[in-house]
Image (cartoon, rainbow, N blue to C red; front, side, top):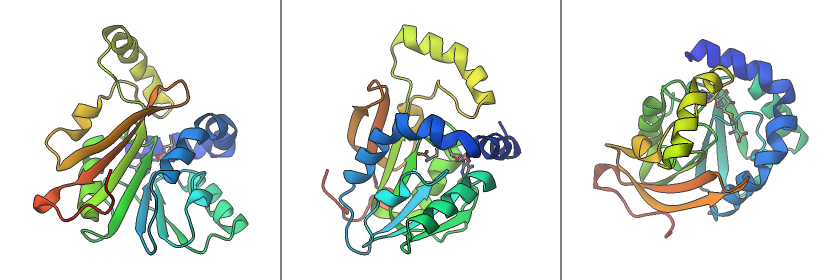
Length: 215
Ligand SMILES: C[S@@+](CC[C@H](N)C(=O)[O-])C[C@H]1O[C@@H](n2cnc3c(N)ncnc32)[C@H](O)[C@@H]1O
């Protein structure tokens, strides 16, 4: 899918997204944010923030910037920010593959159900590494292909179909991490059906700075 198609597909989803994907994926979204153990003043970027379902979960003592390509999804996120009076949250329409932030801007980056929804995951991962400070954290909550041959065959077959509805199913974590400065500090399977992975990486770019949090 190209960027225009992603924008169109997700803007079409926006009205029903929370009903379809809200509840099913919320437990893992919640545990991903809870486990961040966010520090006072921490600068957090949520890439592909969607309708902002996770935004009310962040503590008010940090700063959260949420970006998304889809204006329809962002409109919902803006309404949520207003409804919950989230003064510590800012939203912007931006391509995660070409972000407008300076290098090393954020301590922590969260990408929930995003790397398999973007047209070019390599560009997005490269950009996340660039805008995350050395030693900062990049967290991906996602389904990753797990090497099981039977499941992988099914994922490969259904992936072209799924691309039309906004995501792919055949991406393995090692492909996402290949050649990057990311070091996996923690990985666990989470609900629904323990089919999704919560992966916390430390950004070891430039030989790395001190980790913000010990895994
Ligand atoms: C499956 S949704 C996940 C939304 C949210 N993170 C959640 O937990 O519900 C994927 C989101 O990624 C956004 N997206 C896809 N490609 C993008 C890109 N290149 N830049 C920014 N956002 C993008 C879509 O618009 C959509 O809102």
